[in-house]
Length: 396
Image (cartoon, rainbow, N blue to C red):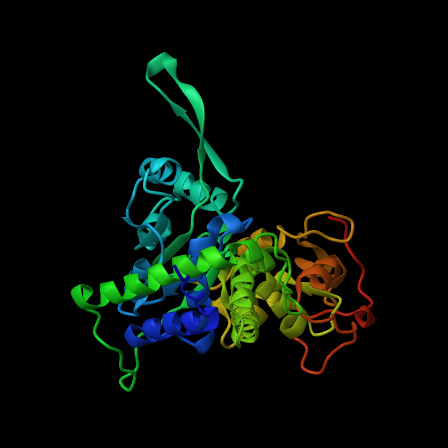
């Protein structure tokens, strides 16, 4: 009996990408690359140390998020559609489903983590723990006084769709696809389950068969990461790049280009990096070379910035409390929380404000570009104080 030739991985991924393109308009070619690789990685979960979450997010309904999740459901193994699923149900499904570990497809995730819903720590814990192959969640089981502690394996591939954003701990473990409504000139094919699900299932079966042929190649692989991608983003993208390398063709290059693009987009726009945005804006646009600045003038500078979030933080401009809370999460070079200190102005009054020297360490560690020299800049924010002002510091 002759053995059928192995599937060409690059051609197969091309078909998976084309299947998504028929029914959905993603925001960029990089998004199609990432989603196709994520579909394939779900068939090789045990070959990796971690699994990235796939997050279809948008600011408004009708942006194709649910459809993206639906198409993924035809391509991944053991899809489990979860809408408002309880943490207990998901614990049991992931750790004990006899038909195999499910791929969780969680729609309307904003109803769980959105602004009108209290933080769901149990579900958040499950999604966080399940990012790693060694992840487990511990729960008490039994009746009354006969309860015992049981470990529930949590490792599972998860794709979510929802409005707005997610908790930082989930976002940083995710490949984020920022969906948007289709423009009038963007056309897609209508998805009909009875017709198109079998087509997706045929691709799913081919992905599963191909996965078996490359499993040994992928297990223990250390794909080369693009320059500048490290730490958590590298954990997220490592399985996807390993898949691309195994597929060959132009997929290794396309995958790395997509990685760079989507990681940069996530860093630039996610709420997870709002603190970094604040530090960068303070350094580049507000202090302008000053070595100290009253809080009132810092707030005025932030709120005057075009295309920045500071003028609308929960419906009102950022205030001194919010500024103190966000900056207090970072530390000075002496490992002390950054906080407002007393400053004596040239007029002789004492006000609260911040010193550039307290921010230098955070700027060096978190901001994406090098710190400019501390020389007064033309057009410095009104109220900025420099060493030339020769004003005395006042003890706290």
